[in-house]
Amino acid sequence: MPCADIEIVRLSIVHPKVYFTAIAALHIKQIDHGLLPLLGLKFLSRLYYELAITPKTGVWAALKSNELVGFISGCADARLSYCAVLSRAWPLFMRLTSQVILRPGLLRRMISVLYYPFNKSSTKRHAIEVCSGIKSEILAIAVNPDFERQGIGRKLIQAFEKEMLHWDNKGYYRVATKIPDIRSNSFYRKAGFLPCHQIKHNDLILQIYLKEI
Image 1 (cartoon, rainbow, N blue to C red):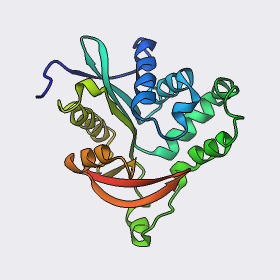
Image 2: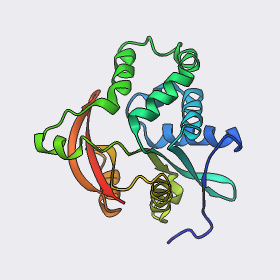
Image 3: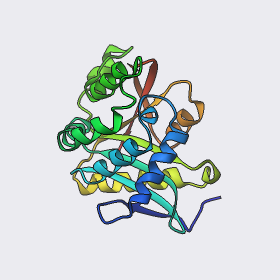
Image 4: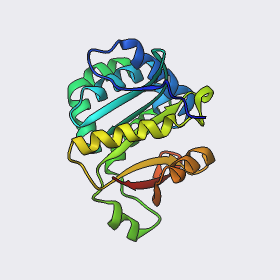
């Protein structure tokens, strides 16, 4: 049943930092694959704050009675967003990750994360040609399990798409999810995304989906 009392808010510098901490905690709980959850709550909290204040990049919170029940982060150009965040905050990120980044294998995975926006490897050559010019992307989306199947994910996607139009960024955008995750793959297909191609990212094979605004 749709949850009518959910408010979708685009976060900014004026919002309480507790929202960014809650987003980081939900990311770690619901998006448990990849490197980012291993870097800790403080790192992820700061990362989402930096994304929220980066031009043509955003973080939206789904709130119920001011409590976070979901979020989405996305951008008009993943490469520009990555570069803007790193150029502004890399010394802080280095400090926040200094205790964990030297663990075996983590440095390699960190390099892979930094390389991700430039990764075009695929199992389908023609798909590269179709998708290579698409820069806009949903970076992360998650909903509290207690509030799933209430339309919150769709509301978050709609908020991102509305902002994309405000940025005059029409056309296709992309999102990636791991192939074995049946629930996320089903969600994107039901939300109108079309499978495009696959890429290798660390130890995962990611399915890339496209949607047109």
